[in-house]
Length: 68
Image (cartoon, rainbow, N blue to C red):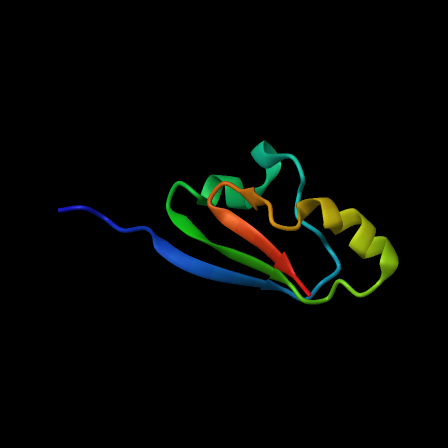
C-alpha cells in the first residue's frame, strides 16, 4: 500500500513573510508529510512587496509561494 501525501493550502493574512532560509522554514520540514501552496494576499505595501518579490514562483520544500 502506498501512502499519498496530503495537499494543504496555507493562507497568510498577517504581515510576516516566510523564513527565507529553507532549513529554518516550517514548510521545508512539513514537506516530509505534506505538499501544498502558501498564499499571501496581504502584500500591499511597497516594502512588503520588495521583501517578498524574490520568493514569487519559488518553493520551499514541496510548498509553492503565491501572492496578489
